[in-house]
Image (cartoon, rainbow, N blue to C red; front, side):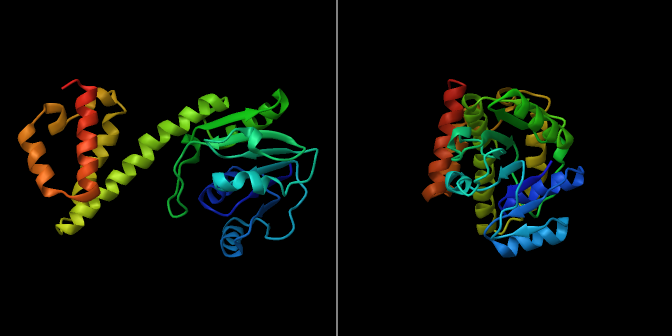
Length: 249
């Protein structure tokens, strides 16, 4: 079927690449950033435009959450299906006289990092069974993990993702700030990070918790607080308090 991806950022790039690698035809990639669109077009051999939106049966919006509503208004075709890729917006945010849906890939996307697309969970929501089956068929060509999800459930999926990914990555960034300030190579900590992540494949995260907070080691906690200041100190105190609350220490 004729499909257009709207957007030129990380999600648009990876979704377009997943389509191409799985032989799912794309009619066009459309957006406002000509430089990024041209790079995607040249790499994946997909026509692009910043001006003329091609006629299609399916439009997939890969734009920021705050842009979804306005961007959806440029689609004036009535007999088509439009899907956004947001985890935190209802399908009803789409504005137009067309069939509305969501096509949410649960992953963190960066253009510079390759991904194993078949492992990415896709969450599908549509107004009718035919559209749901269509999106399931497309997603199933990309991933082995495709599920239906209501907006109410998807909101929590997105919230959990923020805790499990965005917050964790921010802690990595703070840790690297400290290691850089002390001229300690951050690479030293990569085996620890790898083991922390791999361990929860086999052990419940709650059971895998280690460190001075869960041991209630006040000496180490106070020592660390003396080494920190500003936001890093506040994060340290907040995280330790949360750990101790969870284990009722």
